[in-house]
Image (cartoon, rainbow, N blue to C red):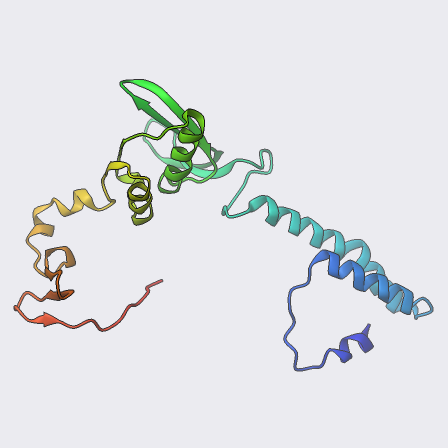
Length: 214
């Protein structure tokens, strides 16, 4: 084993290994080291009986997790979500599903079940499920700010759906402190033709670049 490790070179950075790759390597090592000393045989046995099954288990868990950040051991399709289920409306993490229901004229027209806790990411799948069921799409969609996102607005526009969906900070913008703050982006004058903003002092603002804050 040490000899095989030395062939890789000391300066190489270790990389992740998959279970099928480890299984193949163990098969080769078992054949090469049939007559090896007991300590080497012991290491091979540990790799084969402990590390390989554990790696396979981790891969299965990651496959079950998918793009989620959690799942329940007793119901692997459920995701842990913060539920307000007591009289004080305190949030508690419990395995659950996010159920979406759409109505028209007070009649339920469609429902869908999702494994993500945020409503924002459910709108597209919900509307696609509606279209698949009825072979048509709604002309108008009304939803609260929990569904407001740039991706959803673009999706509604691409499907030619008239959307009445508030963005997340809509109500915050309605407050006097927000409206009277001249330094907020939404309160700056924007020249659409030449694509630039004007600062509160009346000077043109030049584009400096984009940044991302963690």
